Amino acid sequence: MYLIVFVAFLYGCATVVSKMINYRAAQELGTWNGSLVNYVVASILALILLLFSPYAKADLQACTAVPVYLYAGGAFGVIAFVITIITLNRMKVFQSTILLLAGQLLAGILFDVAIFGNFTWAKFTGVLLVTTGILWDKKVTAP
Amino acid sequence: MYSFLVLLAGILQSAMMSFNGLLAESVSLWGVSLIVHVSGGVLLLLYILLFIRERITLRGMPWYLYSSGFFGVLLVSVSSYCVGILGAAVTTCLSVAGQLFISAVIDHYGLFHVPRVPFSPRRIPCFLMILAGIILLNLS
Image 1 (cartoon, helix red, strand yellow):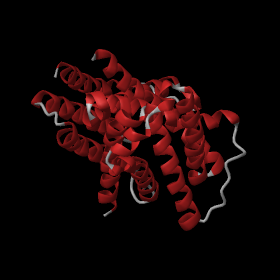
Image 2: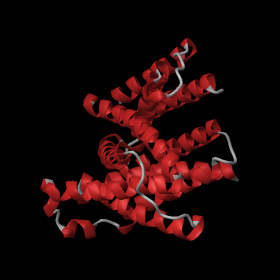
Image 3: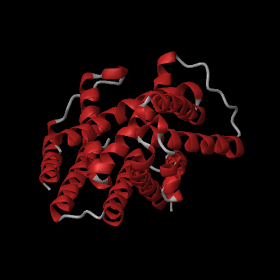
């Protein structure tokens, strides 16, 4: 349990490094081509990893058995990306970050209840504390 | 209106994480990454061709910037793994806490050639509050 919490924390750290690399790539090739590179390289890498992992023989039966809407994740990601880029000219980065986070946590709590069926008040309070702390920190550091 | 759109973007991101977490059970973690990046890449390519009408170029950057794809694969797989165990809300909380922590470290030491911004003591109570929340999440 503690290990997975640490992994999720490290995941956040890696997100920032990734954002900085993507930001540099966008400076070189432009916002759109810069992120397209990310998708192209990632697709090739994921394919190689899949082929050389023990999962290579992942049965197609399992892939077709899951509800089709679960495959929409990639599309959602791109729509979110396009919205963020387009609206960034019309609002402050600070505002955009807060709204993104609010949407993520709001939906996160709802999806956890709807899909995974787990809700505890302790967890809810924890999420609330972390969110308040983040908003407070954003307020303190806002230019 | 724009605020609502960005809020929607956040909801979509969360939906993506939840769906990916569920999908990983059937198609493996690398499989999720492949599906997400192929479908996302094709859609992004179409969007650029149809609406932005920008010339497609993928070459001409310093080689190390291509590592963005490496991070892309890793981040999708790791987030799918974490969401499967912790759920979307807790994973998001921990991830943002990690983001704040590493950003503060990068700013403080001026890593990656960003301007140095020393850590402000005014942020300590905020970080403590986040830490308290994480401990509570751990106990539940």
